[in-house]
Length: 435
Ligand SMILES: NC(=O)c1ccc[n+]([C@@H]2O[C@H](COP(=O)([O-])OP(=O)(O)OC[C@H]3O[C@@H](n4cnc5c(N)ncnc54)[C@H](O)[C@@H]3O)[C@@H](O)[C@H]2O)c1
Image (cartoon, rainbow, N blue to C red; front, side, top):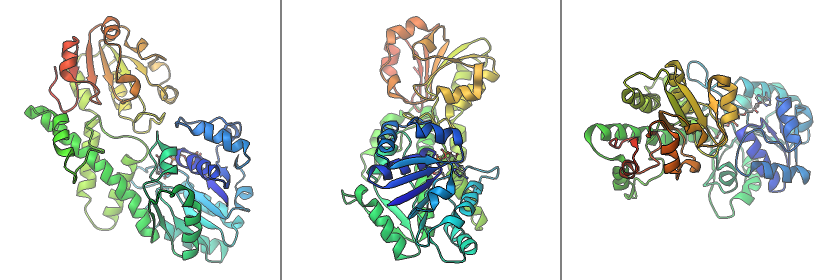
């Protein structure tokens, strides 16, 4: 099939590349000329495991191309995927300006039978608005489908190629059939292809993210309570997780969720709830608990150093909002860094992939280190904000030698408190008593 994908961010680039890799002819369009230029040379501007190799392979097989020329990409396309960003606006709702500019841009060039598919996360009712807008611009009924994306950054290719399920929202059988054929290679293990109305598909994406965010905020609230009451959240987690109704997934306590999806999608769903005359009690609580959780480690740092951080040196391990990505959007590490800088502390950071993005924000306000051990030199404390594998088994002896004081604030519960005590560390974690 001939496919155009508009927007080559985390989602568009993975979508286009994986569709090309299954044999389709894909042209990806972006307004960012520098990005398009780099991609045509096989240089992927984001970090996503395995993506660069797959882009290069499909570029050389002539099945994948990148352009800024929207018209040229749309004219031959049987399927047009919309994968532009839908960031949060001031009031919490989704900003659809990029989407509307693309809808207007593609209308004159669409083939009569082309299926326009929304991959971006968009408020319920957007599919209907796109349908109406295209009808007005083309004076005919266009095929408009919704196909929300559930991939996780850091495991995006695997998630895309082996999805738990594919959800499509359609208003006609033709669109459903084209999409079924497109996804056939990805569903050979019989995972379901779920066809529903566009409104249900749009809602599914928000409900999935809101429920996952709810699990995180719930376990974080319980972790904070454990600390006050002397329980150990890891034991509690074990105690509940074996219940098949509960399970273990997404119940890791930590420093709160970040990233480009959960925060904005929870707020957008909250806005939709209010706009429809209902009260988003749970959604707003999930967001509030999460905002608070980003400061839980900060409070421990402040307390340990009796609010006197000026002149102290902090090592920060992990800047990305989660491991295996360079994405720092809404990352909890940034909240910590802002606090440390405001208190006039020196901040020495390490992250396997996200340092260039952090440098673009903070410039020379931070000290950047390529090796995790270098960030520890002369540090009064280490704060761990992302659970990269690199941090799971550090060299304890080297740590105690390099640090001014062996103090660790572990926002991801990577280590066993008792063992840390035996190794000579002062150790703070989440939902477990400090040692
Ligand atoms: N990142 C994720 O893990 C993830 C997962 C599922 C769904 N989503 C959703 O997918 C959508 C895209 O997310 P993302 O993280 O890939 O965004 P992103 O910000 O990484 O990428 C968006 C891309 O669109 C391009 N763009 C903007 N306006 C354009 C225009 N008019 N024409 C062509 N290109 C244009 C930008 O230059 C950028 O490259 C969002 O709605 C998001 O909520 C994201």
